[in-house]
Length: 454
Figure 1 (cartoon, rainbow, N blue to C red):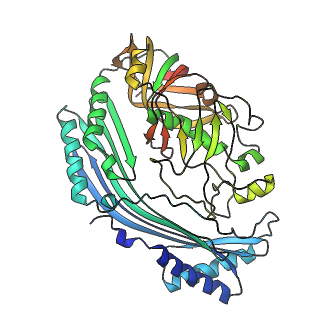
Figure 2: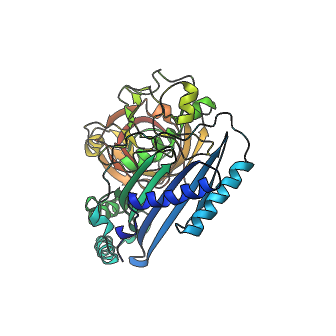
Figure 3: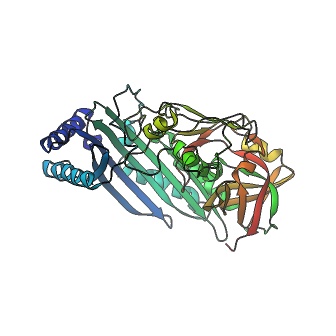
């Protein structure tokens, strides 16, 4: 069956659910209530050993009710939209709220503000069938089989709705589709990988992705072992995402207030190279997500880094009140201890292609992606992890062989101070960090600390 939009509630249907929530709360003497509501219908085709082995579809529902009594607030969640589920969720939220401690920083419910819609529901993606996914996967597998390699990966399509209503008048609703295709091509002693995601499946090209993964696996056969050390690296967009994407939770007013951000005492000072410009923009044409936050506040564009200088951070309503500024629309649903964070990152790119970066490199390393990334030093933002699925030696402006994978130990501040060239930015997809818009980067003095055993 296709991922049907028929299962997605309209704003009118969401409003009707909220009216029942509101009625239940008011009958219990609680006038302040908020509803978060979500529906996601996802279908997934999984393949391995050059054959499809799984095709599944599921529908997930969330009804999350928050009540507020005086300076207390709490939330209860259900996966049902029927009257009994609503009644139970409201009653549980009220019980939890009455049992909660007073919070002197608790705010009244958010007031309604106009939200500019973000049109992200693609009917063709919502209508994608198992047959379509199977045919696309089969074409990709044939590419890999033709090179005597083995393919594994996934092709998924989904449609979703999220909405927020409250008794102060907030009524925000967003619908969206998403398609993802990921493929790993495996040879005897090498592998290659490629992945893409988009709100429209027409932007996903499985055969092209299969060819890219296959070429990486072919070129990286019989990998050499290179001594660890500092090298010029070319990070493909996925590698940029994997690594640089680790730092944006620190662009948070709550993180700054709690003294857990690497930006403490650094906002407004040059921290990165002057070619680094980063913003948060929910309306960027290849971004995804709702244009409002967990309280229904409209998201606004943030200038996170300008010419290497960190400029703005995200504010929830609570952290904005504390700082005496306006909220930016990046707060998480309440109650929470995290506060807020940017969620639609765009790293501005340049005009140099990856091929041009390679051609300009006398000796260096091309990295397809990273994994097992962990933080070593939170304030200097030093990270460790490993390369994976396509690590190549560059000599005299050309890729000459695959390399055994490395472990790295690299500070993000240093990395973003050493960027020599960037490609145009694209929507990049990884495994450990949310997708963002990022370029490939040529970076000098990247620190590989050891060669891995696999």
